[in-house]
Structures are given as C-alpha cells and as structure tokens.
Length: 142
Image (spheres, rainbow, N blue to C red):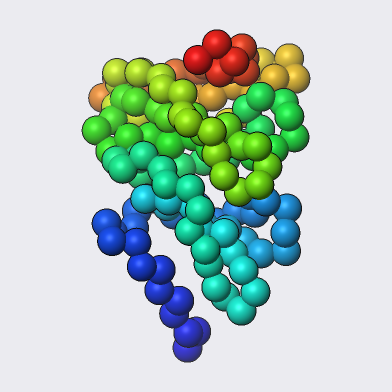
C-alpha cells in the first residue's frame, strides 16, 4: 500500500489538480486553499493562497506567454477566477468573470482555430455551454 502524504492546510482540501507549475521535476498541487509546490522526497511547500471558495480547477496558457495559468470556479457557481502565472509557482491577483449559469466544468482550448486560448464552461443550470473567445485581451484589461 502506498504511503500517504498529508498537507496541513487548516480549511480542508477541495478541487485537486496535479500539474508542474514551475518547470522543475516535481508535480505541484493546486487545491483549495492554495498551491503546494512539489519538492524532493514527496514534500510540498505552500506558496500562493487561492480563492477561499474556489474548488474546481483547470490549467492552460491563457495569455500566450508559454506559462500555465489557472482557472477556478467558485463554490457558489457561475463565477470564474483566472490566475495568471509569472512562471515561478506563484500567481498574480485573479481576474473575475461572472457567468451566472452555474458552472459545472471548465476547459481551455483553441475552439475557433485562431491560435488563441478560449475558455469553455459547461453550465448546470442553464443547460448550456459558454465560450469566452480570445480571453487574453480581457485579462490584459482587468
């Protein structure tokens, strides 16, 4: 049986995403309430605090800088937080998007083939999909 590694965080963990955010050989963890950078020997170091009620995460390059940015959905639904990365495992303060439809899932893709990241959400209450096309200019303005 594998040995468990426990991360003390005080608020309970939710919405885990395992991904390398800082270009080292170790997987990092994104979960409520923060980012834990992986270290040698299955150790983690908490760096950035994230939105207290953000629980569903996905990662992708939203502003075409070659770095993985984060998108999280708030527990209250319909609101997204976008966290841009400077590439060192930390993140800039979030931009907020109010979709109002009860987001149930998030994806980042070039949906329209223009070479820029689009943000897609499946909406549980609206029985619909929202596409935020070419999100990079909106992030630069926020």
